[in-house]
Length: 212
Length: 285
Image (cartoon, rainbow over all chains, first blue to last red; front, side, top):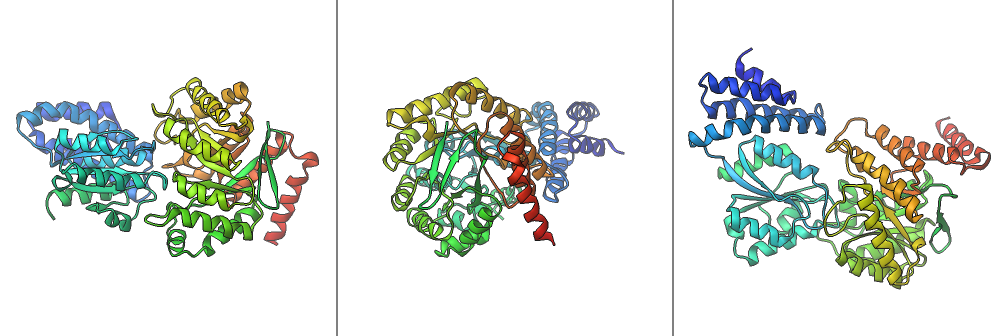
């Protein structure tokens, strides 16, 4: 088994100490940080996403894989910065105002980070104004909104209106998702796209920033 | 403490001395495409079918959520309230964050409904509690407030106390506030179940109010969800939970609840347990 295979497997198994020590080893062997990121961590998270979608992996397993990935990424970050490796895009993400359910949003953030995005996670219960402020402060490529409840979903529309009113709607693509949300609702409120699950959120976000 | 709910023809009592109250959760368009599409075109046939099935399998109260994206929610919730009243005698629980929808449904409803829900947030309490009082309804109070989800049972008790006190300011008695201790999923935090169960016990002991949970999300993201949900109901009932928003059409859940009623001394001579057993056997034959 190659070092990269081993690294991938440790992420997939959710082994954080193992992931960190393999990232260290790869760096000390002179492997380019971008390769460790793309062929190790990102590739492993893509596999985790696939296993999750196939119903073989469950939420806690995805969370421990994410923890392992993050541990590895932390060690890698200074090297990535030194080699001037850029994230493929920046995403501001949050669960809308009044909604305290953040697992779906967290899974999306994990898959986005695992796909190479930089994440600004605003947490849950995020007001339209907070989204606007974060867009102004962080200048993201994408804004992601999640809602689990029919009762909080209308806040997505209010957030869209707030982004327009603040004159920043044109600067970002907006993606939405969550249990009650549909493709049609996304179109109705003028979002750019809808994603039914965390993996497709990452795929569609990638396509959106690459203009495909 | 007894929380009374009623339809035009039937009264339901939530209390530790009565059978555990099942609030059927199925009339909710979330993740139910066919129901959502039917409601969007004003067709209540699937909702009415859900109502009949849930009552037949043991629902005492029906939760009604008309949160269809882009639809006229007040009109839809009111329409559902009228249609469901014609179809079943179970009291209704109106599930909305839209005050206009709640008011339309409450004004049309001939009975004492439950409202799902207010939280301890100022804005929510100031909107939902006056409506509850005006229509002599009862309300579910979810123990979150302006600072989010309280992490400890003590902090959840403080929010519960605040909701009960604020309801009293509007002239409501504590009987008409059912506290929801907030069931978060254990797939994200393996201590989430424990905190909620400890909160049930503490709030029951300190405030004596009726307690309910939305008891299906706890297992989100895990395999064999029904087994987890059934165990959660049993543990909650043992700690003083007196109602739950759940799906009685899942046989394991309805059976667990009936067994708990028997074991908690709320099924004299095990008559309801035996009757349900015979009905199930007959249905199989």
